[in-house]
Image 1 (cartoon, rainbow, N blue to C red):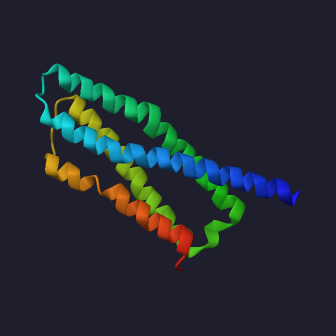
Image 2: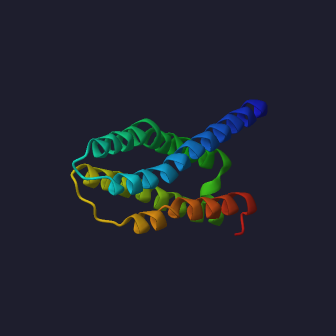
Image 3: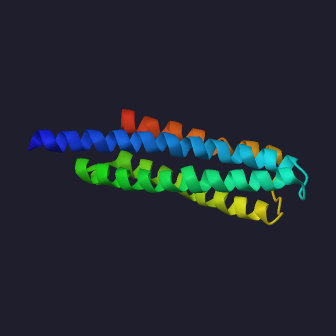
Length: 147
């Protein structure tokens, strides 16, 4: 029986890591898409292409990955008793920040599709650093478990 639980844990963990990679790739790509989108003329055919690309990235990669990451992550946390560990609370906080960032980007995509360009390319490039910093901190928390 213990072998079955161990194998389930390993499959949950593998799936979680795989979908974290998909999600992070999308979180890195979408702000770059926004930069290129904002550099094209608002009423150009290229503008419509960027709206479509962003929508596909959100629909095909980002939203499904987010859902699976949360599902498998919570299953892992329950199976390992992580809810009682301080490092996990910090990790969970960072994952909530990334989730909020994801939702904000989806909203920014909708604004761009309406023709609203609220941020500069420079600001979007800076915002693009959020998932990298969060991912680095999350990896440290999970591997090192500093507290």
